[in-house]
Length: 578
Image 1 (cartoon, rainbow, N blue to C red):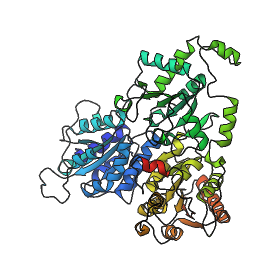
Image 2 (cartoon, rainbow, N blue to C red):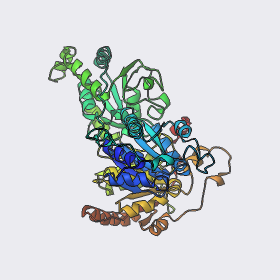
Image 3 (cartoon, helix red, strand yellow):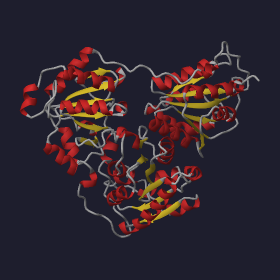
Image 4 (cartoon, rainbow, N blue to C red):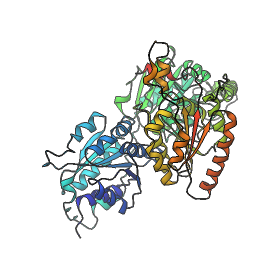
């Protein structure tokens, strides 16, 4: 029986290594979605295309494999666009497999310029052009997603979908050729390696900041940091990369504790590893002291110096570069005398730098916000969000994957909830859209099923995306949703609070989100004080028992009525970049 183009497209994507498909199925993407399923790619039905796109984005980030979102033509694609924009701005390798109207359907209600819309949000526009080119078109789109780390919108016109695909020539069809072989990592130039090694040798207070491009290179970066006496930190999206390292500063930028900000500001060498050192990560440049030499290591020339002047740009893969620089240091006799005087042993350069016992002690005591004393603002039926976050960090198991929505609250789960590694934290924040958190948590949970999924969200974002709570219930996820409920769009309230404005546009009556959750089939608990967390502890225990026994779980929504801290400490950083 001759396969159709839609079937060949699904089979080809599966053969190339697609990990999971999320979507809302309509007439335009019904056949191709089922072709993916028959070829062995798992499918999750979302309740909104925007949620499906964000699930695929989070899945790709947390699994290291390509996520697929499947949409109907026209309105199905436009519903997904905010999630697609987030993925594109984050350089997530993802395929948006969307139907498109036939070329002859000039008056179709579904007709829009899908290619132009895709490009307008930073995605790559590709399409299946003909039955003869279908396999090649899909392979090209997939290679772009993987090798260039891009979000690709692959349009599949409806008039082509039912057309018979040409019979393959040879014994092995192209769509059965197997997973795409990853590109060879880019090796840095010798001159750049030598110069970076010289800068590390000469530094007394070096700091390494790893970003998205540094994920997967943690051991190599840690080894180089140890040899060079550097402290290690991450941008928010790479949080957890150096977990357990006694010289780990945690997140650099708006979420930094006072000690961490002070320490980075005192660095004489800052190296961004796959990190563009943007306003979020460098507090609009204030974390770069006047004495600091600034270096960036990245795979793309366009990223080097994109956000601020740099003294050295190294074009190369982070892991390859770290190994090459470490080899350069080990091959040098420089620093041997100082090393002998400090009691260190081993070949090549080795410097204490910032890595002193005194610094390790200070970091252990003050680096995390959990350890920074704050006034407890709880009272009058409201709980301090910092107290809430500290307590929940202790209640929830450490083997977790934390997703965070956008809003005034977001610093609390980001800074207070520990994660085991870089695959334990998922922050879909490149587009700064509220309402992506619930879908992010579902996608991350799908990618990391052995970890407890935890979501930090605000009441505004939760209500914007609440339809996907049904998806979490249907999937039986052991999802813990922490809603920091201030009955407002809190970021705007605090940002404009010094002005004489009418806040009626951004404040709302208190919504019983726990009752709403129960209506979806989830568990719901209202928390107004630390005493109320006893009920949370009991329900978490029940949830974990079911999950660990391999039985479907029931998501738990914690409706936390939070007190105001006058605007979270990171909020000014967020608005300074607008």
